[in-house]
Image (tube, rainbow, N blue to C red):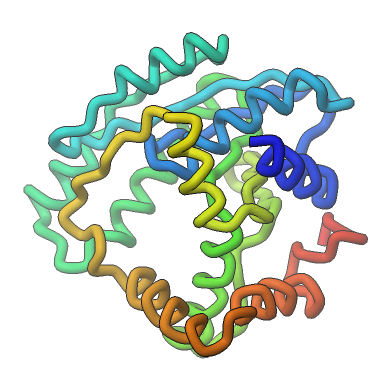
Length: 241
């Protein structure tokens, strides 16, 4: 966890993600990434030179078999206020509309519901669990499927909602996250989504694993290219770009 904390702090500082006196919400899906983001920021708030408050928010999408009570218990241990919001995503996407490609609509509904919840609570900053591997995969997805060079930003300002998204795990590799979550025994909630494992992102993940077998430093080079280019918002010297 000390290694993860070091990476998170460096990322937060490189992109000026947190200012003194702010309240930062963590979008907690229950997966390993968001649980580690919650755990890391909960520790970071105790020694970061810019003091900040932390809250956790979960959208309960109606997916069968998902139990967030262990997450609620963990938030109580961390002394982090925890809000759970019921959103009928599963019912609309899978039962009513029976979407063949459900990921886009699901993501849109979850984003809208989360942003609305933030506004109602008077919070304007949300920490998301995207990590190093997510950035590399997104770059490759955009290139192969859309013919463009692009990736999400470390810090994203949503004009219409006046909400800022931050991604403090961007320097953390997925394997590091997986190991740390296991060692800390964080209460990860399994997601039985019917579309899990069959998405385009999964295709790219498998392609990268195959290529990394031949070119072990491939992900490192792709992530470095994102920062060196730099893509919009990735310039550490001018993070406001």
